[in-house]
Image (cartoon, rainbow, N blue to C red; front, side):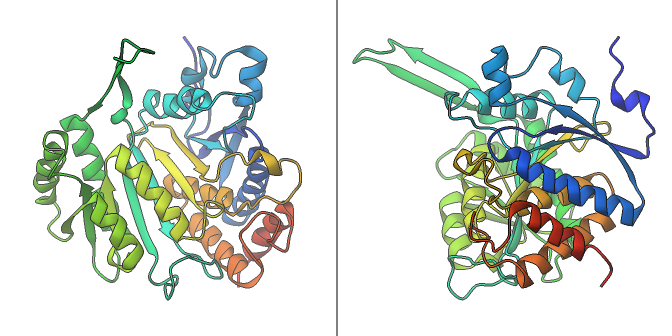
Length: 368
Protein backbone atom coordinates (compact mmCIF):
# COMPACT_ATOMS: atom_id res chain seq x y z
CA UNK A 1 0.00 0.00 0.00
CA UNK A 2 1.20 3.47 -0.83
CA UNK A 3 2.25 5.40 2.30
CA UNK A 4 1.42 9.08 2.10
CA UNK A 5 3.42 11.98 3.44
CA UNK A 6 0.70 12.56 6.02
CA UNK A 7 1.29 9.12 7.47
CA UNK A 8 5.04 9.38 7.70
CA UNK A 9 5.63 12.95 8.88
CA UNK A 10 5.19 14.89 12.13
CA UNK A 11 1.63 16.16 12.35
CA UNK A 12 2.94 19.62 13.33
CA UNK A 13 4.76 19.99 10.02
CA UNK A 14 2.91 21.56 7.08
CA UNK A 15 3.48 19.29 4.08
CA UNK A 16 3.41 21.20 0.81
CA UNK A 17 3.57 19.85 -2.73
CA UNK A 18 5.08 22.45 -5.07
CA UNK A 19 4.09 22.58 -8.75
CA UNK A 20 6.03 25.48 -10.22
CA UNK A 21 4.30 25.09 -13.57
CA UNK A 22 4.87 26.96 -16.81
CA UNK A 23 6.14 30.31 -18.03
CA UNK A 24 6.66 32.73 -15.17
CA UNK A 25 5.19 30.25 -12.67
CA UNK A 26 8.61 29.15 -11.34
CA UNK A 27 9.68 32.79 -10.89
CA UNK A 28 6.71 33.79 -8.75
CA UNK A 29 6.76 30.51 -6.79
CA UNK A 30 10.40 31.19 -5.88
CA UNK A 31 9.36 34.47 -4.26
CA UNK A 32 6.45 32.87 -2.45
CA UNK A 33 8.76 30.21 -1.05
CA UNK A 34 11.25 32.92 -0.05
CA UNK A 35 8.52 34.59 2.01
CA UNK A 36 7.39 31.23 3.42
CA UNK A 37 10.91 30.49 4.64
CA UNK A 38 11.24 33.90 6.28
CA UNK A 39 7.87 33.82 8.06
CA UNK A 40 8.42 30.23 9.27
CA UNK A 41 11.59 31.37 11.01
CA UNK A 42 9.84 34.36 12.57
CA UNK A 43 6.76 32.40 13.67
CA UNK A 44 8.61 29.17 14.53
CA UNK A 45 6.63 26.63 12.51
CA UNK A 46 7.95 23.83 10.33
CA UNK A 47 7.11 22.81 6.78
CA UNK A 48 8.33 20.35 4.18
CA UNK A 49 8.39 20.84 0.41
CA UNK A 50 8.16 18.21 -2.31
CA UNK A 51 8.57 19.24 -5.95
CA UNK A 52 6.43 17.89 -8.79
CA UNK A 53 7.27 18.70 -12.45
CA UNK A 54 3.71 18.85 -13.81
CA UNK A 55 2.89 21.41 -16.49
CA UNK A 56 3.36 22.07 -20.17
CA UNK A 57 6.97 20.89 -20.48
CA UNK A 58 6.16 17.69 -18.62
CA UNK A 59 3.22 17.05 -20.93
CA UNK A 60 5.29 17.65 -24.07
CA UNK A 61 8.04 15.33 -22.82
CA UNK A 62 5.84 12.48 -21.54
CA UNK A 63 2.46 12.83 -23.26
CA UNK A 64 0.84 12.83 -19.81
CA UNK A 65 -0.67 15.79 -18.01
CA UNK A 66 -0.64 13.82 -14.75
CA UNK A 67 0.82 10.33 -14.22
CA UNK A 68 -1.52 7.62 -12.98
CA UNK A 69 -0.33 7.86 -9.38
CA UNK A 70 -0.34 11.67 -9.19
CA UNK A 71 -3.62 11.99 -7.28
CA UNK A 72 -2.56 9.34 -4.79
CA UNK A 73 0.74 11.10 -4.22
CA UNK A 74 -0.70 14.59 -3.94
CA UNK A 75 -3.46 13.48 -1.57
CA UNK A 76 -0.74 12.85 0.99
CA UNK A 77 0.00 16.55 1.37
CA UNK A 78 -1.72 19.25 3.39
CA UNK A 79 -1.52 21.71 0.52
CA UNK A 80 -0.42 22.17 -3.06
CA UNK A 81 1.33 25.40 -4.05
CA UNK A 82 0.82 25.96 -7.78
CA UNK A 83 2.64 28.54 -9.87
CA UNK A 84 0.72 28.54 -13.14
CA UNK A 85 -0.21 26.30 -16.05
CA UNK A 86 -0.38 27.33 -19.68
CA UNK A 87 2.15 26.61 -22.43
CA UNK A 88 2.22 28.12 -25.95
CA UNK A 89 2.93 24.70 -27.48
CA UNK A 90 0.04 22.96 -25.72
CA UNK A 91 -3.52 23.35 -27.01
CA UNK A 92 -5.82 25.43 -24.81
CA UNK A 93 -7.83 23.31 -22.40
CA UNK A 94 -5.43 20.36 -22.19
CA UNK A 95 -3.63 21.53 -19.07
CA UNK A 96 -6.60 23.36 -17.61
CA UNK A 97 -8.84 20.28 -17.76
CA UNK A 98 -6.17 17.65 -17.25
CA UNK A 99 -4.44 19.32 -14.32
CA UNK A 100 -6.51 22.09 -12.72
CA UNK A 101 -9.97 20.55 -13.03
CA UNK A 102 -8.66 17.04 -12.44
CA UNK A 103 -7.05 18.06 -9.15
CA UNK A 104 -10.11 20.02 -8.04
CA UNK A 105 -12.44 17.11 -8.75
CA UNK A 106 -10.27 14.17 -7.65
CA UNK A 107 -9.11 15.88 -4.44
CA UNK A 108 -12.68 17.10 -3.83
CA UNK A 109 -11.60 20.73 -3.48
CA UNK A 110 -15.19 21.86 -3.34
CA UNK A 111 -14.54 25.41 -2.16
CA UNK A 112 -12.93 27.99 -4.42
CA UNK A 113 -12.03 30.95 -2.22
CA UNK A 114 -11.29 34.30 -3.85
CA UNK A 115 -10.66 37.35 -1.69
CA UNK A 116 -11.34 40.58 -3.59
CA UNK A 117 -9.37 43.17 -1.64
CA UNK A 118 -7.87 46.38 -2.98
CA UNK A 119 -4.42 46.83 -1.44
CA UNK A 120 -2.95 50.22 -0.56
CA UNK A 121 -1.23 51.85 -3.50
CA UNK A 122 -2.91 49.61 -6.07
CA UNK A 123 -4.98 51.26 -8.78
CA UNK A 124 -8.56 50.21 -9.46
CA UNK A 125 -10.56 51.21 -12.54
CA UNK A 126 -13.42 52.29 -10.25
CA UNK A 127 -13.37 56.05 -9.76
CA UNK A 128 -13.69 57.16 -6.17
CA UNK A 129 -13.27 53.69 -4.67
CA UNK A 130 -10.42 52.67 -2.38
CA UNK A 131 -9.38 49.86 -0.03
CA UNK A 132 -12.27 50.61 2.34
CA UNK A 133 -14.81 50.03 -0.44
CA UNK A 134 -13.28 47.02 -2.21
CA UNK A 135 -12.93 44.29 0.40
CA UNK A 136 -15.15 41.23 0.00
CA UNK A 137 -14.80 37.50 -0.61
CA UNK A 138 -16.32 35.16 -3.19
CA UNK A 139 -16.96 31.53 -2.21
CA UNK A 140 -17.44 29.54 -5.42
CA UNK A 141 -18.67 25.95 -5.52
CA UNK A 142 -15.83 24.14 -7.26
CA UNK A 143 -16.83 20.61 -8.29
CA UNK A 144 -20.25 20.70 -9.99
CA UNK A 145 -22.22 22.75 -12.54
CA UNK A 146 -21.25 22.84 -16.24
CA UNK A 147 -17.69 21.81 -15.42
CA UNK A 148 -18.66 18.17 -14.86
CA UNK A 149 -18.27 17.49 -18.59
CA UNK A 150 -21.70 15.95 -19.13
CA UNK A 151 -22.80 16.41 -22.72
CA UNK A 152 -21.83 15.62 -26.26
CA UNK A 153 -22.29 16.16 -29.97
CA UNK A 154 -24.77 14.83 -32.50
CA UNK A 155 -23.89 15.00 -36.20
CA UNK A 156 -20.72 16.90 -35.41
CA UNK A 157 -19.26 18.83 -38.32
CA UNK A 158 -22.49 18.87 -40.31
CA UNK A 159 -25.09 21.63 -40.79
CA UNK A 160 -27.36 19.65 -38.46
CA UNK A 161 -24.86 19.54 -35.59
CA UNK A 162 -26.24 19.64 -32.07
CA UNK A 163 -24.13 20.22 -28.97
CA UNK A 164 -25.30 19.74 -25.40
CA UNK A 165 -23.67 20.51 -22.07
CA UNK A 166 -25.54 19.75 -18.87
CA UNK A 167 -25.13 21.52 -15.54
CA UNK A 168 -25.30 19.14 -12.58
CA UNK A 169 -26.11 20.21 -9.03
CA UNK A 170 -26.52 18.00 -5.98
CA UNK A 171 -28.10 18.78 -2.63
CA UNK A 172 -24.87 17.64 -0.97
CA UNK A 173 -22.75 19.86 -3.21
CA UNK A 174 -24.93 22.90 -2.62
CA UNK A 175 -25.28 22.41 1.11
CA UNK A 176 -21.63 21.81 1.96
CA UNK A 177 -20.56 24.90 0.00
CA UNK A 178 -23.30 27.11 1.42
CA UNK A 179 -22.70 25.93 4.99
CA UNK A 180 -18.95 26.53 4.66
CA UNK A 181 -19.72 30.03 3.33
CA UNK A 182 -21.94 30.85 6.32
CA UNK A 183 -19.25 29.67 8.72
CA UNK A 184 -16.62 31.64 6.84
CA UNK A 185 -18.82 34.75 7.07
CA UNK A 186 -19.02 34.26 10.84
CA UNK A 187 -15.22 33.93 11.11
CA UNK A 188 -14.63 36.94 8.89
CA UNK A 189 -16.82 38.91 11.32
CA UNK A 190 -17.12 42.03 9.19
CA UNK A 191 -17.44 45.02 11.57
CA UNK A 192 -19.94 46.57 9.13
CA UNK A 193 -22.18 43.53 9.59
CA UNK A 194 -22.04 39.84 8.67
CA UNK A 195 -23.83 39.21 5.39
CA UNK A 196 -23.77 36.29 2.95
CA UNK A 197 -25.14 36.96 -0.53
CA UNK A 198 -26.26 34.06 -2.69
CA UNK A 199 -25.63 34.87 -6.36
CA UNK A 200 -27.64 32.78 -8.82
CA UNK A 201 -30.30 33.16 -11.53
CA UNK A 202 -33.42 31.68 -9.98
CA UNK A 203 -35.83 33.50 -12.30
CA UNK A 204 -34.54 31.61 -15.38
CA UNK A 205 -32.56 28.58 -14.19
CA UNK A 206 -35.57 27.18 -12.42
CA UNK A 207 -34.29 23.70 -11.52
CA UNK A 208 -30.66 23.74 -10.44
CA UNK A 209 -30.80 27.26 -9.05
CA UNK A 210 -34.06 26.55 -7.29
CA UNK A 211 -32.15 23.81 -5.48
CA UNK A 212 -29.48 26.38 -4.55
CA UNK A 213 -32.13 28.83 -3.35
CA UNK A 214 -34.03 26.32 -1.21
CA UNK A 215 -30.81 24.95 0.29
CA UNK A 216 -29.58 28.45 1.05
CA UNK A 217 -32.81 29.33 2.88
CA UNK A 218 -32.73 26.14 4.94
CA UNK A 219 -29.07 26.45 5.93
CA UNK A 220 -29.50 30.15 6.74
CA UNK A 221 -31.80 29.25 9.63
CA UNK A 222 -28.79 27.73 11.42
CA UNK A 223 -26.90 31.05 11.27
CA UNK A 224 -29.26 33.74 12.60
CA UNK A 225 -26.37 36.17 13.20
CA UNK A 226 -25.61 36.30 9.46
CA UNK A 227 -27.88 38.28 7.14
CA UNK A 228 -28.94 36.03 4.24
CA UNK A 229 -29.02 38.08 1.04
CA UNK A 230 -29.70 37.29 -2.63
CA UNK A 231 -28.69 38.78 -6.02
CA UNK A 232 -29.31 37.64 -9.55
CA UNK A 233 -25.90 37.29 -11.17
CA UNK A 234 -26.46 40.12 -13.65
CA UNK A 235 -27.45 42.48 -10.85
CA UNK A 236 -24.40 41.35 -8.87
CA UNK A 237 -22.10 42.31 -11.75
CA UNK A 238 -23.64 45.80 -11.78
CA UNK A 239 -23.40 46.24 -8.03
CA UNK A 240 -19.81 44.98 -7.88
CA UNK A 241 -18.91 47.91 -10.12
CA UNK A 242 -21.27 50.54 -8.72
CA UNK A 243 -21.16 49.70 -5.01
CA UNK A 244 -18.55 47.04 -4.20
CA UNK A 245 -18.70 48.13 -0.56
CA UNK A 246 -22.14 46.51 -0.36
CA UNK A 247 -20.68 43.00 -0.25
CA UNK A 248 -19.22 41.01 2.63
CA UNK A 249 -19.17 37.39 1.39
CA UNK A 250 -20.72 36.03 -1.82
CA UNK A 251 -21.54 32.34 -2.34
CA UNK A 252 -22.26 31.19 -5.86
CA UNK A 253 -22.23 28.41 -8.40
CA UNK A 254 -19.17 27.16 -10.26
CA UNK A 255 -19.87 28.90 -13.58
CA UNK A 256 -21.05 32.21 -12.18
CA UNK A 257 -18.20 32.18 -9.68
CA UNK A 258 -15.70 31.71 -12.50
CA UNK A 259 -17.05 34.84 -14.19
CA UNK A 260 -17.53 37.23 -11.27
CA UNK A 261 -14.16 36.44 -9.71
CA UNK A 262 -12.44 37.70 -12.87
CA UNK A 263 -14.47 40.88 -12.55
CA UNK A 264 -13.38 41.00 -8.93
CA UNK A 265 -9.75 40.56 -9.98
CA UNK A 266 -9.91 43.68 -12.12
CA UNK A 267 -11.60 45.64 -9.33
CA UNK A 268 -8.75 44.79 -6.98
CA UNK A 269 -6.13 45.97 -9.44
CA UNK A 270 -5.57 43.08 -11.82
CA UNK A 271 -4.55 39.45 -11.76
CA UNK A 272 -1.03 40.36 -10.62
CA UNK A 273 -2.33 40.72 -7.05
CA UNK A 274 -5.20 38.21 -7.07
CA UNK A 275 -4.73 34.86 -5.34
CA UNK A 276 -7.11 31.97 -4.84
CA UNK A 277 -7.56 28.76 -2.94
CA UNK A 278 -9.13 25.47 -4.03
CA UNK A 279 -10.01 24.05 -0.66
CA UNK A 280 -11.04 20.67 0.67
CA UNK A 281 -12.01 21.69 4.23
CA UNK A 282 -12.64 18.12 5.40
CA UNK A 283 -10.23 16.50 7.89
CA UNK A 284 -7.23 15.21 5.97
CA UNK A 285 -8.24 17.12 2.83
CA UNK A 286 -5.63 18.50 0.44
CA UNK A 287 -6.10 22.09 -0.72
CA UNK A 288 -4.40 24.00 -3.53
CA UNK A 289 -3.36 27.67 -3.62
CA UNK A 290 -2.29 29.71 -6.61
CA UNK A 291 -1.88 33.17 -8.12
CA UNK A 292 -4.61 33.93 -10.62
CA UNK A 293 -2.52 35.68 -13.26
CA UNK A 294 -1.58 32.71 -15.44
CA UNK A 295 1.78 31.70 -16.86
CA UNK A 296 2.44 34.93 -18.86
CA UNK A 297 4.95 33.21 -21.18
CA UNK A 298 6.03 36.45 -22.89
CA UNK A 299 7.64 37.57 -19.63
CA UNK A 300 9.40 34.27 -18.85
CA UNK A 301 12.93 34.67 -17.55
CA UNK A 302 12.93 38.47 -17.67
CA UNK A 303 12.53 39.01 -13.93
CA UNK A 304 9.73 41.53 -14.45
CA UNK A 305 6.62 39.57 -13.45
CA UNK A 306 4.73 40.59 -10.31
CA UNK A 307 5.00 37.98 -7.51
CA UNK A 308 2.50 39.64 -5.15
CA UNK A 309 -0.34 37.26 -6.05
CA UNK A 310 1.90 34.24 -5.46
CA UNK A 311 2.92 35.67 -2.09
CA UNK A 312 -0.74 36.29 -1.24
CA UNK A 313 -1.39 32.63 -2.11
CA UNK A 314 1.18 31.62 0.52
CA UNK A 315 -0.71 33.68 3.09
CA UNK A 316 -3.93 31.89 2.15
CA UNK A 317 -2.18 28.51 2.42
CA UNK A 318 -0.94 29.33 5.90
CA UNK A 319 -4.37 30.58 6.97
CA UNK A 320 -5.91 27.27 5.93
CA UNK A 321 -3.08 25.40 7.69
CA UNK A 322 -3.88 27.13 10.98
CA UNK A 323 -0.96 29.58 10.96
CA UNK A 324 -3.22 32.61 11.21
CA UNK A 325 -0.67 34.96 12.73
CA UNK A 326 1.85 34.16 10.01
CA UNK A 327 -0.77 34.78 7.34
CA UNK A 328 -1.69 38.14 8.86
CA UNK A 329 1.96 39.18 8.99
CA UNK A 330 2.36 38.41 5.30
CA UNK A 331 -0.81 40.36 4.50
CA UNK A 332 0.47 43.38 6.42
CA UNK A 333 3.92 43.18 4.80
CA UNK A 334 2.41 42.99 1.32
CA UNK A 335 0.18 45.99 2.04
CA UNK A 336 3.20 48.06 3.11
CA UNK A 337 5.14 47.06 -0.01
CA UNK A 338 2.29 47.86 -2.42
CA UNK A 339 1.42 51.05 -0.55
CA UNK A 340 4.89 52.46 0.05
CA UNK A 341 7.40 50.81 -2.30
CA UNK A 342 6.05 49.60 -5.64
CA UNK A 343 5.40 52.07 -8.46
CA UNK A 344 2.89 49.81 -10.23
CA UNK A 345 1.54 46.27 -10.18
CA UNK A 346 2.10 45.83 -13.93
CA UNK A 347 4.89 43.60 -15.22
CA UNK A 348 7.98 45.63 -15.97
CA UNK A 349 6.62 48.75 -14.29
CA UNK A 350 6.94 47.79 -10.63
CA UNK A 351 10.13 49.76 -10.05
CA UNK A 352 11.74 46.52 -8.89
CA UNK A 353 12.52 43.10 -10.30
CA UNK A 354 10.52 40.02 -9.38
CA UNK A 355 13.09 38.89 -6.82
CA UNK A 356 13.47 42.40 -5.40
CA UNK A 357 9.74 42.55 -4.68
CA UNK A 358 10.08 39.27 -2.79
CA UNK A 359 12.99 40.76 -0.84
CA UNK A 360 10.90 43.83 0.02
CA UNK A 361 8.11 41.67 1.44
CA UNK A 362 10.61 39.65 3.50
CA UNK A 363 12.09 42.88 4.90
CA UNK A 364 8.63 44.10 5.89
CA UNK A 365 7.88 40.89 7.83
CA UNK A 366 10.11 42.11 10.66
CA UNK A 367 8.21 43.66 13.60
CA UNK A 368 7.27 47.30 13.09
